[in-house]
Image 1 (tube, rainbow, N blue to C red):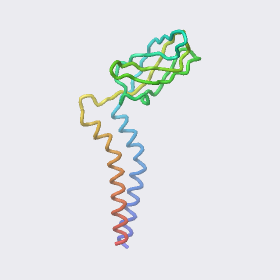
Image 2 (cartoon, helix red, strand yellow; image 1 turned 120 degrees about the vertical axis):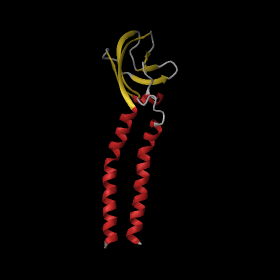
Image 3 (cartoon, one colour; image 1 turned 90 degrees about the vertical axis):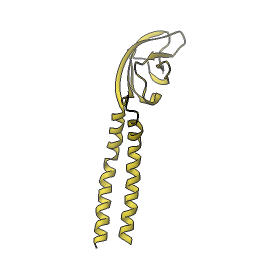
Image 4 (cartoon, rainbow, N blue to C red; image 1 turned 120 degrees about the horizontal axis):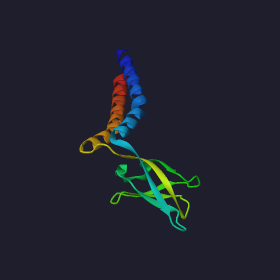
Length: 147
């Protein structure tokens, strides 16, 4: 009977840990990044529907997926971040009206760890390590109940 009770307590503990795993993943991202908002005038030429703006901070992981919001002063624009050059800091924006200018507002994530070089890989591995721990503890609990 004690084995079954121990197994149930461990399983209940694991369920609680798994409930908090999404929050842990989100808080890890929040720790690794800072959100920045920048505005710039972007002009497109005749028959051009892309423009560029230079970001003051490097885009997190050099990935346009971390551009969280793009806004244009022209209501007919449909701005989409299409590429980023880490060497120049230029963000290429597509979906703009041709032959006009607009004020673009960009909200993006940049790395916040700065000089703490070991923090980023450690925090990125934490959700994986917790998930592996949950699996290992689950196997041990099942083993305990049935042996």
